Image (cartoon, one colour):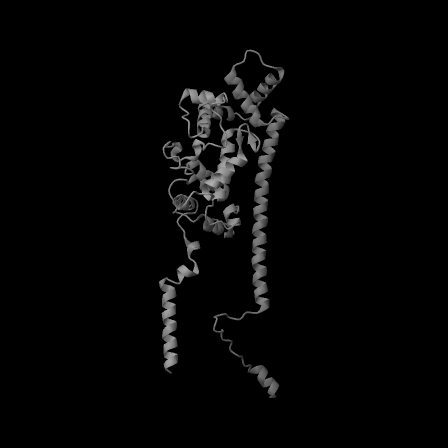
Length: 348
């Protein structure tokens, strides 16, 4: 048998030991195949999710178009319902042809969607309007006072609702201490719910009580997206921007959004009557950032920590800086073991 044939029948292999870093060498081809497999799985999942989402969207859009075809062409359904409520409240003896036409449209809507009118009838419109106006009432006034209520509703010069007042909806339990206006400010439940709905997920807004220490919202969101057999979970805004802590300006954004939603205005505008949203946003940011001194800064810091617990729970992993970890037992033990090794080596 020749030397070449002997090598063919009795091949020798050189053992590959990992280097000191612990890295086991792998071929470029193996890594490429693994990456291709992962991409194929992600593509398949995206195609399945896209098909499901398109079917749901198509169904609801078609349903809405069908209702419009049978009820009204140009007027939105929201305006149709609002005009019916206004007509019921005002009880005018004479109505215009346009008003009568819209009212017949609402009657048709109630026939097409038979559950709509009973559901709307369960709501006390007057109580809802009064509650919304109370939440928007400046904290320096008492909404239960008939004179205050009349002055705000009639927009008198004695009761101007502007960006220079903190609305009641900003306060914890929607109550304010006139002798300490900072107590409970920016701690209302509606703000926490709105923040969660905006930055984490609408479903997380249901859990506004407590300190949010039962779940890690961002981690749960990532795990849900990795599950191949589950329906698509939309990436929350906090995950997209890697948001780990609540900031003053994110609170200011949510406050303006809630204020706009409570106002009942149908389209966004920077200036709404006497209320300037841009200046209102500036006032909120200045409360957090332009503090008069270290005592106020401490209260602001505690407030932001309170917000972070409410939104993201009690996870402090982002605070584990190298300096902090260097003082912990794992790092200390590693340093001690290294010192012992160095001492033995030096003694030899």
